Length: 254
Image (cartoon, rainbow, N blue to C red; front, side, top):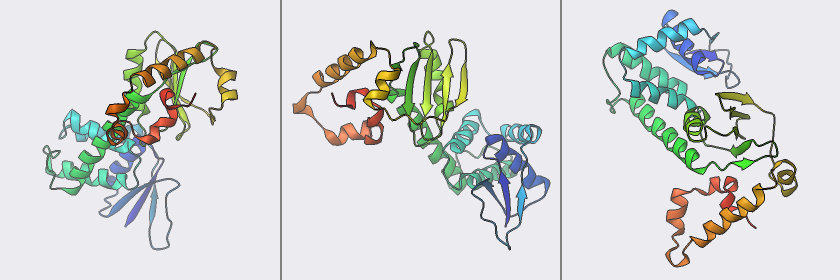
């Protein structure tokens, strides 16, 4: 087993795939830096990300995979699931060997893995688009904190820039310590060393004073439209999982 260690980026993974072929590694595993398990009996190969090599692999896959399949591949990478790199490598090698569309060959384990994982990421993307709740700060920036299961911020940027094109906003992924910021012109990725506690004191320090009555109105509306006689907790949780509640204004007390 030849272990290829890469920097954790998608371009880095593509570079690793290129070098699997370049060095003719027949039994290879791709792991991100920081997750390697060095062994005296397991040779390692350090991958240095190359846009040129990554581009060649991407263009090579485009010859045999549809646009939808290419997106499934990149979405699978965003899942951050352990071992996804090897499943993606197996998928890529299968496509390049067959030299024909393979994305519907669900009898192949890597093809099925890519399809299933991409669907999970797609589902999380739509949940984030539905559950993001912005709050207005004192400097007229609308911000929201999220903690998605998968790294979906790159996938929701267009939705929010289209829908809120007339507002400055920031969506911060508390789990991954970065955010997407829209400045009325473009969306940028920003790294922040911030751990919001969402205490009453912190909220009062940063939020616009008009934000509090609006939040209360939203809570009142949510309560008034909740018909107790038709309450179905199981269905409610299925559509709005509990793990999202701490970021939903309507689920906060008071």
